[in-house]
Image (cartoon, rainbow, N blue to C red; front, side, top):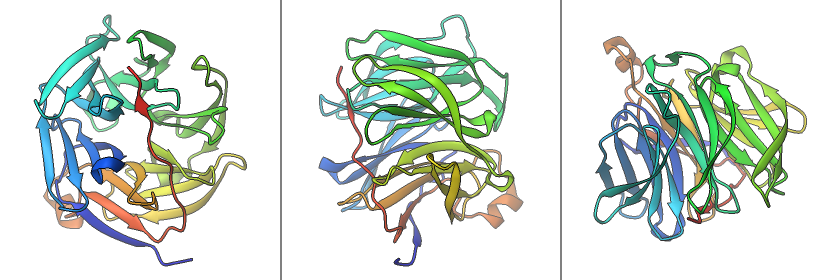
Length: 299
């Protein structure tokens, strides 16, 4: 096994970096700064960073089969036209909960966008509990709610055979699985496949590799862990020089590079002196595994 190497590739010092996503045709990494209210795109060839500023918290970015992007802004699904820097609302959720916003989300292999909500934080991971729900935005722009009573809807992905949906509600401190019906987008039979070790802290964003193992970013844990959902065991730890690691995705020419976003919210001078790289995006190489390309929203 080659030695693991960690480097900073995007020096943005995001307040709350999240939702990394590889866009193959542009050799670029997309990500958001949720409370910084911007969507960013880093070109891996030119090293240039472009940003689109938006007028509300923006918690995820996903590919759209139009060639543009879909984002979640506050409690809304929206289309982002990168060239015009324009945002068009597609649908609203949680209209009865003024303090709610979307958090993490991902597109399934059938082109539906799954995304969940949470109450607004008063401090990192401090919020009114059980206010969130998990939703799907279908290609016809209709929305289905799967369940509610979610604390912090977070990382999600699908098994390689698309028969299992993996999901994290952060404050449950575990990774759950559901049976998945790719034809309908329905999820059933919820169960736990991994419970966090104490030193891992809070499970956040998640990505699957080509061996069917899950990579989970650990908020306040300064690490990404690799877990085996079949055995419920943690099989690898990658420590990063930023405590608030938020999410991860595979990218690069052959999807062998793991990109990890992080946050710098709530840090004081002492914390900055310990963690000068907080809020940046890291690239991890030498893991010896690969990920799979992201799917595009079909709406």
